[in-house]
Figure 1 (cartoon, rainbow, N blue to C red):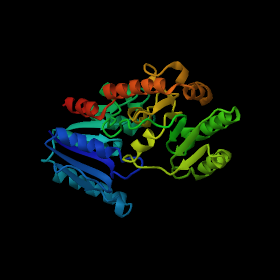
Figure 2: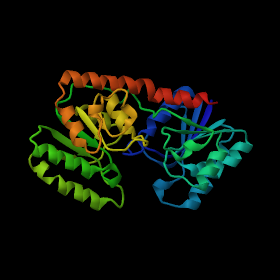
Figure 3: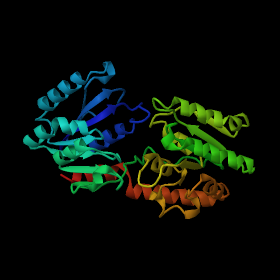
Figure 4: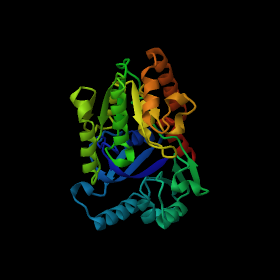
Length: 337
């Protein structure tokens, strides 16, 4: 197969989109050639059969430039690819979908967002197949949609040495949607109840949420001063495995229906997830699943003997390998052809 991929960024150092570098590598192992059109090109180390074409955001924003370059690229390269995989951005399908259909190309779109509109409906109509990881996705209502594995690189995200006990990680954007303040409140309750732990919050706010991040840091200052909590800046996807491996527990407050891939990255790395999301309900006991507050589940997790925690973590790791690995995802996508 000769594949065209359209995505936001090809940059293994991007703290949010760096994971897609691994996706491209995996696609390249199964395809004769892979051409990637991206909005922004950064640092990458990709196989010889991968060609990257940037729309030029790294040199300044210009929508007219993006559109003209995109149309030029898909026309110029039209004999080099036979299928198209659009990752996240429906705009690529809206611009190129009719041409790809006329040229006889298979069009696949990955879209996992809860919200959508009439443009999303058009993009779905122009796509042969649409992929998402959750039934809560806007696209899940359509007949040509398939629910897919999340796509975790289980070779990169793998267990290391036994982590220090009673260490808790919160890894994600310092935004209200991630409920970071609720996590800090739980830590304050644990500390007031004299429960032993150390915690790390790793991440940065997105634009517009800087004040919220300051509130979080101020809220946790007393714990920081007593050596119970530390704040770290965001890390790249390549650096994340070591972060997970250094902690015994990972807390994520994303509700069910929306699948945060960091839950599975942590689990693949041997860090036991403590979550609201019910996606791990078959491998994580109910006592470790967060209900109204993280406090109860955290207390249950913190008093687990290490041997028992390790068994649960291994079960989660096996679940990720079986149900959500990157290899499984890429095979499923390419099998749609």
